Length: 188
Image 1 (spheres, helix red, strand yellow):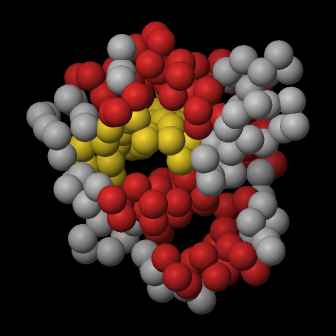
Image 2 (cartoon, one colour; image 1 turned 90 degrees about the vertical axis):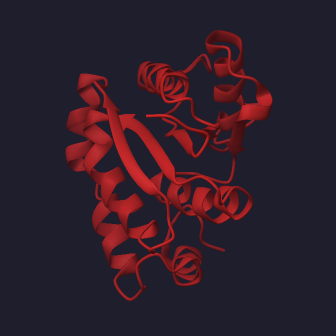
Image 3 (cartoon, one colour; image 1 turned 135 degrees about the vertical axis):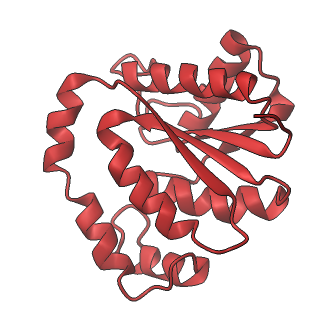
């Protein structure tokens, strides 16, 4: 696969108690950077907000800097999406902000953990469902085993389905209005 018409997004996970990238974050970033180089992607997209007070920069910036220092990706090839607070935000804000400026990207490679893959697919497929949206290809890493158990208890996909049940697939205005009204992380 060639191209300058593709991008890869590394879905953020979290930091450990010392504010270092978690195991899943490191593995996702490694896989995303491998895909970036192998597929000759035009952009690497990093995500994540400044989700704890001990941070002096958002998670998207921390991941961006790590990719620059360890995987030889230059800053001008990285798009940082710091508005994203979860998977819904990652899909929504990347479609709204990144693709508004870079509509020449036809393929979006999405990297996450195996325990998170089904939820990520459902959310991205709902938000990126218009005919002119890029083709989405999903990749997963073998995530931290104890996170599989935690994911089994996660109700966020049910909340996402409930939140978007009256939205037209891919309609950003409708999705965002529901996010602002019902999503606990984005409510006004």
